[in-house]
Length: 359
Image 1 (cartoon, helix red, strand yellow):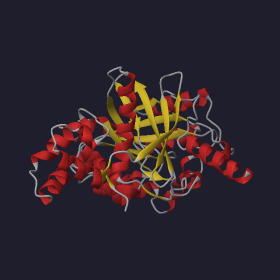
Image 2 (image 1 turned 180 degrees about the horizontal axis):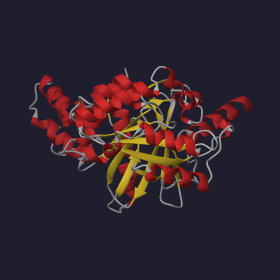
Image 3 (image 1 turned 180 degrees about the vertical axis):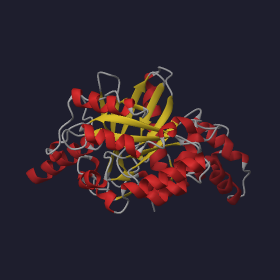
Image 4 (image 1 turned 60 degrees about the vertical axis):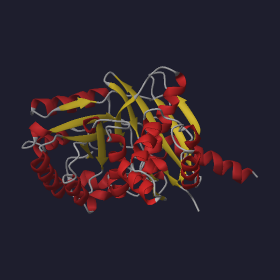
């Protein structure tokens, strides 16, 4: 029987587990400190626990659910990791360096079923959801990597924007958020965490009720149903007008700003009329919305798309700004290391398939 990842437990879960073993629940705080502050890699290193307790933890829980397969470092400091899970599936995680700190982009599913026609993540359909422990372990693996370099660097921000649709794995993502946000552990502030969704309307409304001050981003990528449906299959069941109604409800409930992600695709969604439509779509939400214009990272399997020219991006940006829309053109990172999310994983799987075919 496969052991559960210790990283998938909240401190409350761990307290309950110790009490069920007939032990004191304060043991959970001791283990928590070893996991997230001292960051040991084995239970035997937890020196203030008895050998009996350490052995029981070892028998019950896993501390290494991820195996590092590939690490790619960009000239700009971005680091991309390919991890193998215990079932041999592979996922990607990315460390990005910003002026405000170190941000890690985590994956939440093996593959993706959302069906965005420009995206490398969806080249392989969803195999399964990641557990909360497997998502937390991505943060830990990156932090271990930093610790081993001896540079006293700490993961300070998280974006849940890797392979998969986070709200399609809602319960595990929520548990992950509670673990990494815990003040006695990694203590990554809720306002330093952003969760992205392609627009699962019922989950946006549920997210508004969770009480966490975590940021929400929505992958919009088009200002109308015609264009959005052509590039994002999810728009058929979650059309723009219903998505915007959910956005209104979220803002009313939380009074928190939403970021709209908008990948710029040449002659698809980057025309001046699209910018004007987007400004109109957001006109009554300007105070609490923000548009992130994203240069497209070409994917060989989706060669029908190309990135918008610098001139078209700037023209689009200018129209939004003139209409009072808060927006920014995202700075590119990691363009020299399989930049598009899912590319590294796809490349590695193809390499494996070629080796099998040659045998």
